Structure formats: C-alpha cells, structure tokens
Length: 561
Image (cartoon, rainbow, N blue to C red; front, side, top):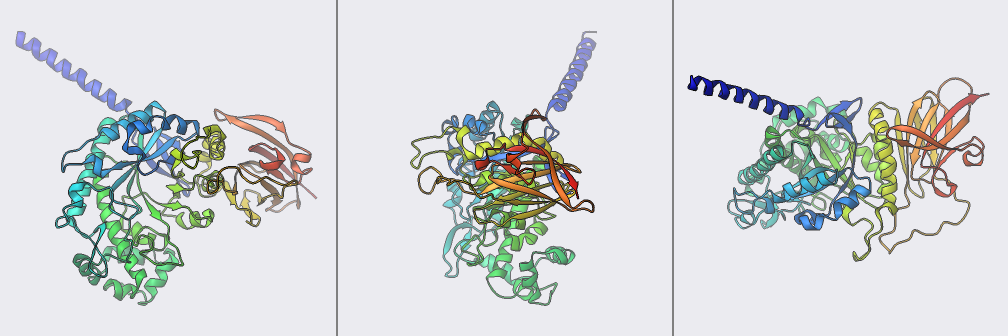
C-alpha cells in the first residue's frame, strides 16, 4: 500500500511537472523570425511585427560590462529599441573547449533592464577582413589553423576559408554560443545574429595558399552553376558580364568560366567565404534558429578587389552568396558613402531585404526616412552609437534629446506601426536629399509627389560642433498613402512636397487641409491646421526647417479644373 501511494504521488508529481514544463514552454516568447509581407521581409518579435530602430556599438565597447552600464540608458533615451553589439571569440573561448559566457549573460541582463533588444555580432574568424579577434590558441598555431597566402607566399593575418580546422573551430564556438543563448534567453532579448564581420581578403585579390590554388584550378561547383543558370536573367550586371566572357559556359574551372583577372578572383573568394559562413550559420541555427545576416564593406569602382575585402558580399557577387548561403537571411551594406540612396538601391533586391547594419551616425537622421520609406528596411543602425554626441576627445556628451538622430528616431518610433503595416505593399516612399540633389518624383497612390529642398528665405548659420563632427546636411522624408486622397508626410526637413495627379480626372491638385500632429500609442492626435502661408496657399506641404512646420503631417487633397 505504501509503495502504491508513493507510486501514485510520484506519478502525480511527474504529471504536475509536465504541466509546469508545458506552461513554461507556452509562456516563453516565440522565437524571432522574418516573415514576408508583399515585397518586404518584416521582423517578427514576440509574435508581432517589429521595426529595428537600432544602433551599433564601437568594436571594443562590449568587452567591458562596467563600460556599458551608463550607455544603455542613453541609448534608450535616443528611442533606440535594438542594439547591435559584439561577442568576441577570443574572450568567449580563451582556452579551447572552455567557454566563458559572462559577457553574453551580462549584456542580455543589461539590455533587459533597459527594455532593449540585442543583435549579437559574432566576431569569430574575421572582423573587417582580418582575424584580429580569434583566440590566442588559434593565432599561435599556424600549422593547424592555416592563413591566407599572398602572391609572394607570405602568410597574412587572415584565416583561410579553405582550412577545415579553421571552420571546425569557429563552428564549434558559434554552436556553443547559440546553445547558451537559447538556454538563458527565454524572453528573446536576442533577436538576430550577425555571422562574422566584413569578411574578405585584404591586400590581394584572393587566397593563394596551396589549398586555395587547387580549388581555384578545380571545377566551379555544379550547385553554384545551376543557380546562376536558373537566375540568369536577374543576375547583377557585373556578374553577367564576367560570365559572358566564356559565352556562358556551364562547367569548367573558375578561369574557364569567368576568365582571368581580379574579378574572377573576387568571385572565387565570394564562393569560399559564403560556403564557410553557410556552414557556421547552419550549425548554429540547428541548435537555435534565430535569423542571421552578414555585412559588407563597400567596394569602390575606382579600385580593385583586395583594396576592399575580396569576396565580401558586394552587389557584383551577391548572387554567389545567395546561391551558396541559404541560411543567411540578409546581406547588409555598411554605408558610409555620401550617396546613401544609390547604395541602398543596389542591395535591396527581390531575394535580399534591405538591412542597414552600419551607417554614419551623423547624417543618418535623414537617411533613416529613405531606408524605411522607400525600401521597407528591416533595420537601420548607425555605427559607434555609444559615442554619438561626444566631444572630439570624449570630454563632453550632448544630451540625447538634443541629437538630430534622436529627433528622427522619435518620429520613426511614433510611425512604426504604420510603417510595419505598409511595408512591401507599394504604399510608402521616401527620399534622402543632399544640398545639390535635384527634385525627386515619387508615384504613390493616385498622385505623383515632387519632393525637393526648399530655398531658405534667410541665411542659415553653419552647423555647430568641431570640424569633422558637424552634422550632415542631408534631409529626409517618408510618405505613406493613407487613402485615395490622403497622405502622411514625415521627416526631418527641410523638405517641400507638391502633389500632381497621376490618374485620369481633373488636372489640378488642391490641398483641402494639412494637419500637423503626433501619433500617441498609435492614435493620431492633431495639432495645428496648416492652411495658408504654411502650405503656400495650397501649393505644397513643407516639413521642418525654416518654415517651422511639424515633423509629422497628414494631408488631404482634392482635384479641380
């Protein structure tokens, strides 16, 4: 009888434990994922669409939790909801097979305390093309962990993609990291992973180690060639031109298919970096299936591969990456070019959502409206966000509310539900205008929007701040079609918008009325009615700048003869 009682209670205890485990599982937030809506990919966090209004820390900031403590509240005050922050292989695994997760756990805890989400940047085999964050036991054992070789046969401080030992060691560490995050982060503070950082060979167009030479002389993998043939009509023009040198041959060595030259070397390295990182990402996702992306150091058409990291996922070799690394969700540009729109346009493709992993913090206040408005970007993340507003020598910090980026992010935060609702539907547009950018025309709904920078009536003083740290003079705006004759216009200005009919009917557009206002908890709260001088007596809408008009406006139009 006693044994039966024990058995019954034991069975009941197991049942209750099972209920508890199921309850905990049910209570745990869903794993973040990417979900297609129209032509866009939206981030889904806690089961709901999430706009990554982000900032990336300096490369070494995350090596000290004490250093990070005062930074988190400042980032939250800037309306940042996602922080891109590194995890360093050299500190995670200082001894082979022994892992220290204190920086991982500490950052997750600090982010939760400040209501932030995290994207971890895996500084594994490569960072900025070099292998500077690998553990000492990898650095010092070059017989086991082979390096890239240059034309003279000299070793370079870059791990070779052709080394199985390199791949196994990196993969082992990354899998351990993903397994630990899954175990400690049921709240899903960590929502995405960057695999490596700005990979590629610097100083030469390709790896010339013995293993690399053998692979280069061998056949181009058939799976890659199959992909290129299937997508022949939509490949990057540079890759199409390169392939055309062999009259689109479908088998052979790299030089037999793509010809001789540094562009072929770049294609070869793109395949090998993509192959390596695909295996790292796939192994990590097998234990914890978070979305993953890679980032790209931009190439320069006036230079050659090796001046930028050769093999990096540039637009000209993006198709090779898309073919080879299906476990990578996005190829993200690091945009420091003055022509932000041109770069963003090249990276946003049908098979690649726009994800801005890095960009200039000063100047980002205008570009953010273009990224989210024109391209339904998944993320916008200025680099070195922890030092934005800091004096030249770090001696002074501007209040976060005084920063131009904060003002833009505050607008984007208000509009986030509307942006997410309209992503990929063709109902949004955006501009980023430099001082000399000509007027831009955007077709949206029933109207063409002519967008320009208005000429100020009075002289405008130069931006304040020390040389080299002055704010960019780019202005940005975002537009959403709310109905047949209704639009939302928002931005940091100064931007002027005129509306012209794009459908049959009366030829002239009039402005019925303009309201400035704010979205508070998703509800429109109007402020002033801006009819008269503020809209040029019905000729245009003006955002920000000298006109002293609101940064969010709703416009109702009509047409007449």
